[in-house]
Image (cartoon, rainbow, N blue to C red; front, side, top):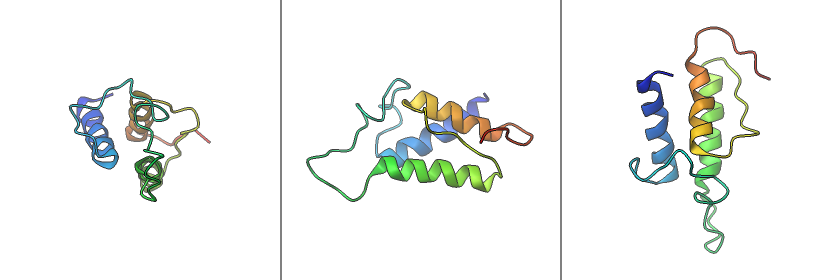
Length: 92
């Protein structure tokens, strides 16, 4: 995957998650390190916003994206990176 593609999605994810890009790690898990604070009970869940970002990006590019098995930041970036490959997506 091209470096500019990785950096674009990395910075977008960091912005949505409200984490400085240099503090985000590829191994950060959405259900652990990046889990929303359940004590606050906020209606503003950055993880939901990140899923919507990924789905809308895929739709805008006319491709499908599979987030079912995405558990870490690295997996998300890799999945988003597939959207920048030329040709139709074969994912369902």
